[in-house]
Length: 93
Image (cartoon, rainbow, N blue to C red; front, side, top):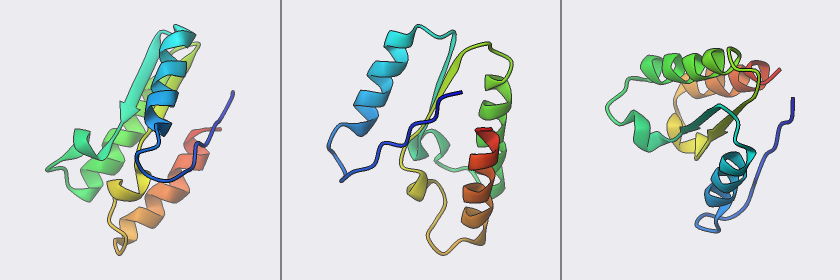
């Protein structure tokens, strides 16, 4: 498994780069997780939706999951944020 963290200032093309690489890979399972996909979700629904994407990715021999703006998925002061940030590295193993 390959893991890649693209870090940098906002609006510098990090997501576009990740999507381009994912599309070029031609992997059968490609998912983009963004806060925009989860408008109106409760915190628990967000964690559940993200967990499902990672669980589904294991059903494919090759998959790409892009998590965009993870810091915006759960609010800065929200205790669920800590749970998600602890969950994601384990989901990537």
